Length: 404
Image 1: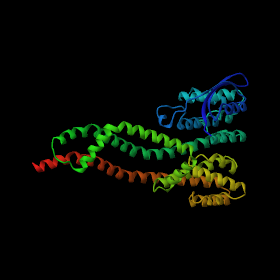
Image 2 (image 1 turned 90 degrees about the horizontal axis):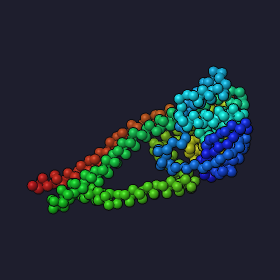
Image 3 (image 1 turned 30 degrees about the horizontal axis):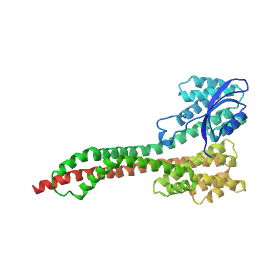
Image 4 (image 1 turned 60 degrees about the vertical axis):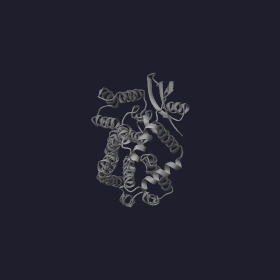
């Protein structure tokens, strides 16, 4: 079921005004969630959810880097013996973004009104279930500083993994984007000038030149229509993929079969899965409950369904290594062996942590290898585009010189 973003206003048990944002399927679900926190609603307004292609112009949520920095600072303050309310007051006075200041202020007021920290965090979509569950465990066990420290380490390593993958794709995508833009500009403005020159020759043009002129004329006459049709087709395809889970499963399965991208995706999902499970299990969360929070952490449907299957087999009494072995080869054999060793030695969290570190290193090496392979590919693509245009535009002039 799709969820919507709602802005809400209310008062706590002591009459202090509160406000915030929350994702919910309906207003009734939002009201029920806030009533559990003993918050009386005074106003609800549904916010506009922009399409993904507009997200680069709007920033409605606090970034992961800010959440990670906030977690690290809060853990440091609590470890230093600063009371929780005073710690939030210190963080609010710090140099943070306006959106994070609003969140800190809201959480501070809710804690001041008697709400537990994990319950206050659940009212803000910036903190996922994993974050809130670990905070709840820390509060119950009296080790909130330790849990926040583990959360900060987990968020930093997960963010570093995303940055490595993103940085490997920025350079080739930007170069190819600039090359495509230059290619279109040449077709739109340079080729027509040469076309007038070629018309005065009165001779048949080479096939390559005729192809380039045809592309230029098609771009001038139908370029806007083609761009609009392409955008509409992409939008419609994204909508259909979002609504049809079978399509998403097919695309996710296809991604794992690609030569280099498949291995990179598998290793990245494995690293994120094992690290999150190690963090939850080391915090004292039972394995079956930890798997509940791990399901959506990879963002990959095959890993999500495999996690559900693993959870069901654990409830039936099987071991984690046995359940991993029956995921149809989704997890590498090393993960299964490390989990089996961890279960036998009673150090499953340590083995999962070591497995995550191994596959994070594998992601780094795969990213480096992919970057090395992409550089010659980009040069070949640029050479074909630019070289083909130069040949198409100057070949008739060379032929005319030979005739003369």
